[in-house]
Image (tube, rainbow, N blue to C red):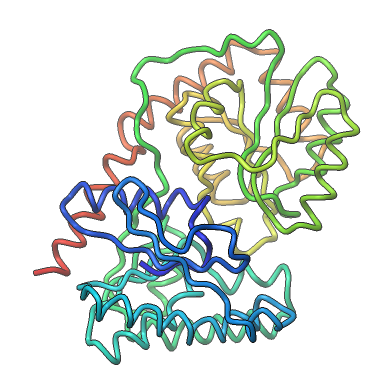
Length: 370
């Protein structure tokens, strides 16, 4: 597996690797640690993790998007070295920012490629860099995907997108979570508690969430996750000015579900104008479901449609007034809050759990290994 992050907070990659190891495969992850903060090599729950660091030249480059192109060459050499030490059978590329490496390896070694598209990467970066770059990567994806043997993605909207640019087989492996219980259990909070743990970025409506919570003094809200430093600093500063909001920062992957169980409702706002997030399925959706907690999502997005279809939460317009009304509705109507929470847990038990997704992933590997 090739991954363009240091593999410290990537639950999808972790659970996929863990499931494949359980099925008898051996997994090595080459992860890009731009800041050299993690060990060069470690084994975590059976996953062999090798981290690729920047050269001095790459460090001198001013923007991550420029560093990426030079890291592709470095990572290719790192992967070749790993292969010659202990040959691998399949290249599993996580997202477009690793696919160029995988294609280069395939051309040299003749190995099959799985392209695991967690999102539409070109649309995701469009928020932060000029649109011409986003267009370049969308075009690059169409060229590189010709060399892929199998596409894995996260939901139906993304499957439809990739079906329009490739005729390769596509399997949906959703970001569902393992079941932790089969019986519904209320929280024991004295104050109604709202929670958000995930990507900290402008489309997630978090600065606005703090404003909303400030107006409802008899509830409590915790916000955690990772994001670009400037936005995180702004959010952290704003949270510190509000008594009933707690900024908890980076959360260990293993702590997310236990913390979700302790909440009363989960927030999953995203801008319907964001071409990536509006089609994505957030981890929070499935974290809330296995914990039996209702979620608040934005209308006119895929998470919103999913929430309405399965009756697992409330959908709102992308504004503060609608969000406040939804929070108050759940806070003041314990019967509704419990009903939606029970629906969420039932849907997780019957369909939306990792145990079901794991079978699809393992079957895919069996098909490729034949």
